[in-house]
Length: 384
Image: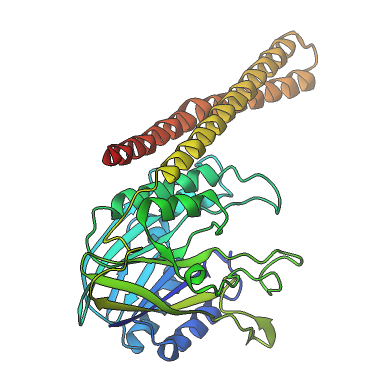
């Protein structure tokens, strides 16, 4: 049985945050018939209008089975179209999904997580995992404080799919590269093979020379398709290619389908004995568990440092506010008293906000890291 899967981050942000969105969704929808995928996984479909456009285009192209999440802002941004029935579907929000205090790093508010769908194919069911991990939000070459968080998300996906029997394909915008610890953790804890690496046809999916990216941006390969066999059914990659990568004209200007390219993978699912190097289901690499532990410790240290910094800012704000309040009380001129009183109110309010951030948000983050550490401990128990 041949299985064709397509993944694309469509950059469907709401509130005018994504350029040419309506025209781009129309262009993507127009390409669905000739791409002829069995299953399509879209990411960043946060705008309801974009979702409606893609669903309508999917119906017109013969995709009758549709999955997306209704809850949360934009419903997680994930949208899956299938030519074959979806027998079961579940969605798991990430335990560690971002920092609510970073309003411009809005992953926390997008409802990110992973969907697991059982697709009823003609020759038997295939499980599909669709996901979109936390973005980096760092300038090129800078340290990425969200790397530990993505390691935690990879651990959570791995722990969930270990309970799934049968051939499995996982695809989406992973926001990590082949040399990153997240990749090693995911592969090491799931036994999955990544298609472009297996076929040695690696190509960037974020292009440096792109109409929707800053001039001089680096090209990156962060959109990927992974797969693993089942107990009695083998899975192998036949091909993988970059699609929807060419520029298009929008309003007479140079545009593109998205700020990412798509990936179209063709897999062969067949009955038969597995090879010596193949494992019927997930295998555990102890080195991957050690690597996950190391990066979770880094994440915990980063969170504690953030709490100390925010506590320090709270204390400084309280001190400044108290001093300004005392001077306002002693001031003789009304405009001086008013200015100092305003400064005191601003400083005390800021100190209260920083105190709340450090004691509420960071404390919750530490607790969530502990939950992921519990998953790693449970996986270690399977090795004993």
